[in-house]
Image (cartoon, rainbow, N blue to C red; front, side, top):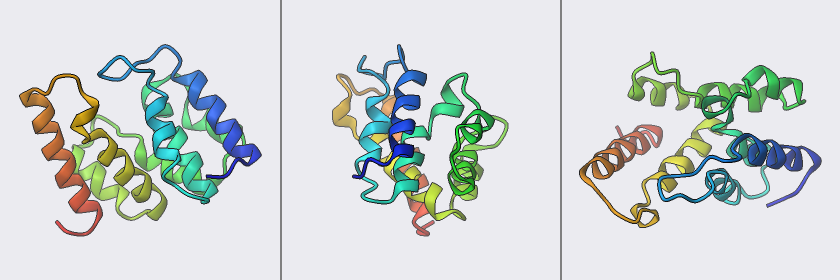
Length: 145
């Protein structure tokens, strides 16, 4: 993990944007993108993309806002692909991500973390179904569909 000025900016935006949000277990939501960012190694674009991957989808900050913050076109393109438009079927959304290595790397880490049932206090049928959907999505992203 590296700490460049743009990564520090992305950390701040991530934490501020997700402030007050919690995950399914009540933990601060920003721990999820931070967890992903630490898996991206020394790849600045991947770290930033991991930190910001849910910002446009789950907060009031837009992709245009992130572009105005100075994040490069490669990051904005990946974030665009990672921001799921509910009008697009989920597996079509996953197929679209497959074409972009940066988005694909972050999405696989995202799906893997979201599939970790040890994070949950209780596991129900809906959690198991979601995990199966994510497993299929990871297979598609890895080209094993």
